[in-house]
Length: 139
Image (cartoon, rainbow, N blue to C red; front, side, top):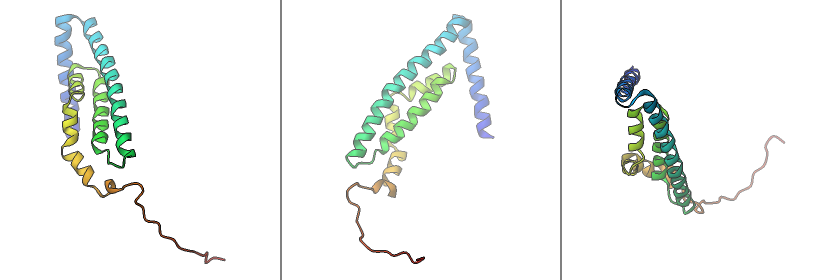
């Protein structure tokens, strides 16, 4: 139910901003602005996403946990969705996630939680090998 209320509030905000923008600059210019912001935003996300992926791979290959990069990748995905949804309010939220704020959010509690998890303590090359023999009891 709260999600449904959030969707209706978002639709109300977007429609209000569309109407006000169309009244000021015209309907065609308003639609063009929405398309331009989506195209510019997605191109920025593609560039930042590649940089984040390279950083994550570099950390993983060096045996470090790429927790911050994983969170940044998730936030980039959220930003992409917000930029693809037509509207000025969602575009603004999407562009905010493209600023250094995204990095700060990734360094907070979520990043610390992932780093502290037992799954992140794996270090390549330190596995213990247990040798043994077995025999099939079905024979």
